[in-house]
Image 1 (spheres, protein in one colour):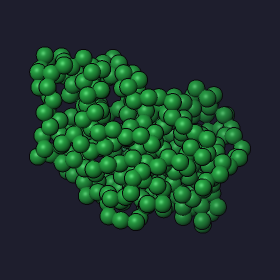
Image 2 (tube, rainbow, N blue to C red):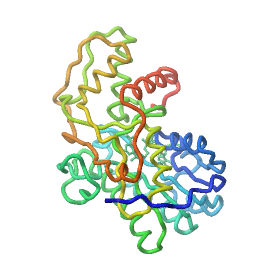
Image 3 (spheres, helix red, strand yellow):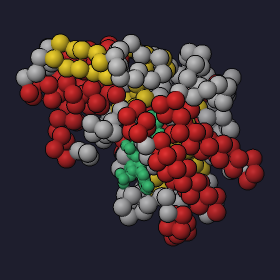
Image 4 (cartoon, rainbow, N blue to C red):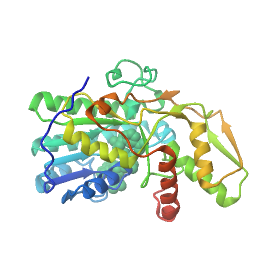
Length: 322
Ligand SMILES: NC(=O)c1ccc[n+]([C@@H]2O[C@H](COP(=O)([O-])OP(=O)(O)OC[C@H]3O[C@@H](n4cnc5c(N)ncnc54)[C@H](OP(=O)(O)O)[C@@H]3O)[C@@H](O)[C@H]2O)c1
């Protein structure tokens, strides 16, 4: 059982680097930190600082000297992208995280949070998945290359703690969604993909929507604003080597999620499931008791979260990433 740790609160005026600050997680972390009074936030888009470029990353850290870092930059994608480009998911993520973690060590970053993903856990892990299921079985094949990169990141953080005594930590979010998500037809995760598909069906007056898989896999979803709160909470209340699961602890079938989305966007036609497409892991629900014991719980329910995400999508549809 993890006990709450009393850490000094983060200095609101310190330089705080949010790597990946334009992404789903990074932008939510940035918003939350601003809301909490942080005045020294720094972030650069990938076209100005490619984190795969080791020399550029080291130069950036020496120049800006962040005291705190949230590492939310990564090459991220859904099943299709992960299956099509496994080398990219392995190689790019290894390079991004190795460069950032090495530069952070070299320049004395005091507190750092590395973001992984629940796909690090074995495909057949007992549900709900506890943190100590890590490295106890085979990974889900559709995203094993990505998962191995993320596992290497967790180990990198643990090794830095062992070798240099830095109080760095890792968090493993469940599936996230919310404003700023990737809605592209080829790169998105399931929930934004469903929002786009059903919204387009409404716009086109379609009477049938076809989704990938059987609809039966069970998934857990956390709103990214809750995730951002959890990131700051962990930085201020957790100091341990083990990665901490972040989620709601509740799951639903993809078919149930699709039904809520269809209802929220106002689609009343039929839904067909293309069972020739892969389902991925049959069930994924995180055991979030470590985080609960530390004193953190999510605030945003699934239907409310989907409603606000659909509203954001409709407002920003024309300026979304492809
Ligand atoms: N989305 C989820 O459901 C989910 C679930 C669990 C865990 N996570 C984890 O959360 C983290 C962030 O995911 P996300 O969903 O926020 O992804 P995202 O929306 O795709 O954002 C990724 C960010 O990484 C940056 N980036 C990618 N390659 C880069 C490079 N070579 N150099 C510099 N920056 C680069 C991008 O910067 P630009 O925009 O400037 O190009 C972007 O801001 C990842 O570690 C992921 O594993 C996400």
